[in-house]
Length: 366
Ligand code: IPM
Ligand code: MG
Image 1: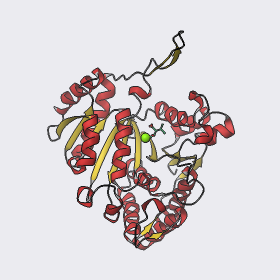
Image 2: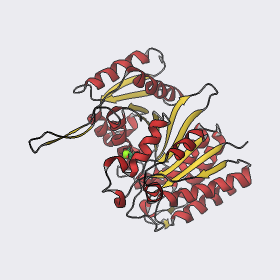
Image 3: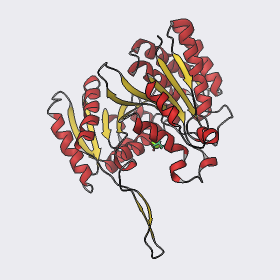
Image 4: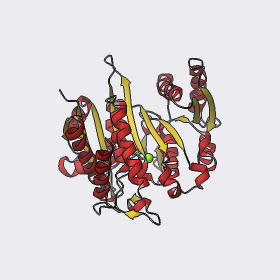
């Protein structure tokens, strides 16, 4: 039986970039015999429009049953005025939580062809290859108590809680240490232990874990300093491990180093099960970009690089993943660019022309 994948295109540019996933998956099925059992459903605003909720129980059940989920993007101004619990983003957060996707891998890799698209000087970003490991199911995103309460004197109070238990820190720590072992063997753990007890605990647990990974060099950094170091000297980092909120901020920052937010893929992984499988959801780091949706300007590369991550992490197909990454690299080197990456002497292509160019390049490479 072919492995099953669930496509959740979502909102804004989500459906456009997901079309290119379909195109590339078609190519893999036709020419490489790599077949998937593909299902598609709604999430985010698209789900609100049809079902009145940002994700249905049925879709959560489907996502749990699938071997992997690919998600486009959630959200848009049309749904901004909805009550908090009904906003499109809640659909994504519910999927992360209910699938137990605690480990979010966000690689920031600078392609040679895009060195000039970065907002930093070329010498700072050439060859840049950072992996941000973001804790994804805990911290202030989910901590209780939370909410807005009336104080009775015309004042209201908004509350969120930053909370981490030992086991949550240890399991994300292990993912990060193991990744560091396979890469440059350097791990930087990021928190605010100077002001937050949750950061103190985070640091202590990482230090304890380090004893199990003597080949990895562990360092610690405060999150504000990390933001500064990312734009000052990004190549000092190999793997960064951090909590949910800091990971959200720092990965946007790292994304821009690569030239465009449209270049950063991500994998969200759960615990390994007894059969060596794990729940997984792959999505670009960028959002739904409602301002450019429907015009063919969206960059599908973060979505397609997320597909490559799926081939590598969920289906153990590193050669097929490398084939796709190589095709992306060569299309960029040939000067084909979506609008976000446009530079002098390059050719602007639409979302679908970019997808098409990649399948042509894939065919040429095999
Ligand atoms: C991300 C996004 C999400 C987050 C939003 C859409 C809920 O910014 O994946 O980085 O804050 O986690
Ligand atoms: Mg974000």
